[in-house]
Length: 194
Image 1: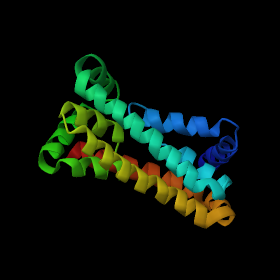
Image 2 (image 1 turned 90 degrees about the horizontal axis):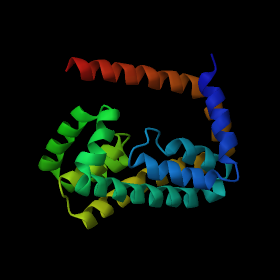
Image 3 (image 1 turned 135 degrees about the vertical axis):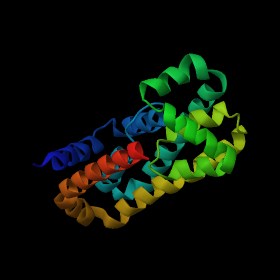
Image 4 (image 1 turned 180 degrees about the vertical axis):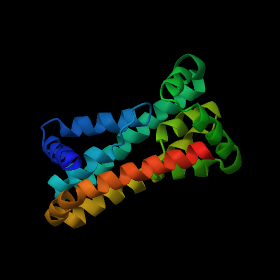
């Protein structure tokens, strides 16, 4: 079953679309507030399709993501109950919010930096930072550094891998995709049990 290979081919096709940069910015911005799909799914194929522009795409992704993070912060700060709470409930992130608030109390600004770099849902951290009334400028700096490191790493891997990586990745994308599904399922089972 070549589900992930088909998706991979579609993403490479979309990466060459004339509105690909706009789509990348929209996905990056929205993912920091409410959207469940990370911008890496657009950034990686765009950087693979045009390695000379990989750094530019990483910069766009970082900028749009940090701007979206600022909106998430403001939602948490000013509009938590009327806007952010229903969004969190719709995404079933209530338990995550409780854990994250504890992390903010224990680790402060480092939580934003780690969330920006890691695959943890960044949107929950942006809203939580506003809710916890973290200082805005340090929040923006931690977001920019964490998100920038992540997106420049993705762009760099695609840049250095180039066409050879694009073809090699296509060969293994189904294995990687199914492996990720298994890891997510195992992670969810472990999370529910603990």
